[in-house]
Image (cartoon, rainbow, N blue to C red):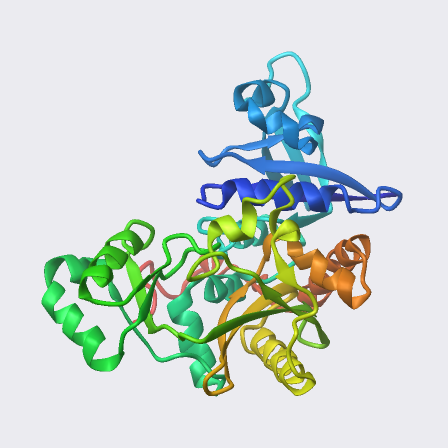
Length: 389
């Protein structure tokens, strides 16, 4: 019997469309001889839809027509069975549409990749591929991630962070805090956005003001770092879990602007997502630098308790040859399949590995204790409704 794999994508995120591209790449790479693929699309309003029409990217040009060809659904755990049901339920026909055995989240950005969707799947007790709630949340939050990596002794750039409300209420204090600890040029980022959304550079106070204004539109927490001027960006993917983690070859993205932009990453011909972005693959760097970056990538993966496939982005300061961990993408665009194909693993093999890792994690979780059979509320004669103080 085939395993039913639910591919979750979309969501209330500024990276919604990128998730669609990545998900359809994944859907068409899964081995249909072993798995039944069930697309689960999350609309920008947070509604779930399913249907075969979701598998053709051309259908997304007319969303109203696409919705009319799909069914809005809810997913429930009914006595251990994860059931997909039409919503709202029809009066004179059965609403049950199928079941799920495992979920493959292919989502990007806030409200989905940041642990939100992972927590939802855990509440339903649905096995899912990729990072857990903690590693997803850490990976999405640039501030928390740097705190953890710095504590673990991994190299990160010096930074300043603050709530955007503080900048609006006391800008002079924020400017002083930034300029006393960091030197221009600077790079300003929203704390929890991906795909370079809301990220800009600043060479002076005036540009810093504009950059802070932009970043505050995407997050209520902002991080500011010193910008490496003579910069090379190198990416490396990691596949595996806490027991075994394997790095891919390294790539060097080609940017047309000061920083690698949303346009550089995704607005290429053919809707190929990250798979079609300009890059040097493998990166033209010395063997010892490649080995260092691969080692740091695996350490970052382990420190953040990652699973599945992630992509870690690095910065090389060409003036000093120092390497810094910039960020991790816990669900990278196109699942970084192009890096794995260059490493010798096909896209189909990659999705197979992700599904098997999800099932492995579920088997391990079944040996853990999450609740006790004893119902203390049923105990008689002892205690009270006030509990223990």
